[in-house]
Length: 176
Image (tube, rainbow, N blue to C red; front, side, top):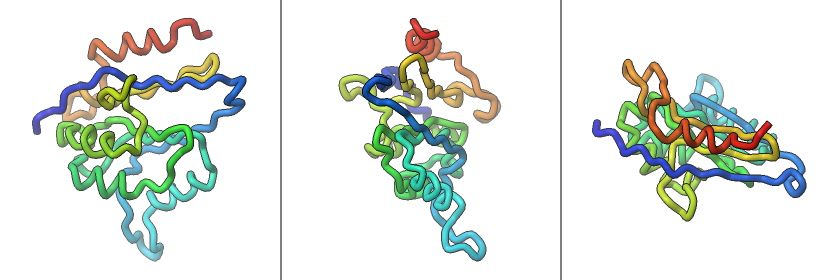
């Protein structure tokens, strides 16, 4: 598959602790399996995980990637976007992973990030990116893309692009 261009104008969301007095974040990975009947249960494990997260009502929800099996258009739509049942009030995020890279990350960028469900749109509504930062007081939470340039069938993650290291340095500047 042709690999999607690496977009490099990431979103930084900042919250002031004096006005946003708390910030709760739920993180899940390997969740993009879709909704299917699992044995005696009428719902899949991913659906049950999403329901448990929704009951906690986190401010932000982060998916660490892995939409099965190869991050194709139909898998991104059905197994991730259509199955997502919680709109976190301060934002939903999804990261790139080896499974998304099996189809060149094209459908990750076009279907998942293009769905409007996720907040990876950069400043001024620019292109969606596979990495981001959340700034809260002295805390910086970075979501990074170690899959895009990974080796060995995208199994050995690496960050060797010129954008993310500079982004990390900028995001953490002035933090304790």
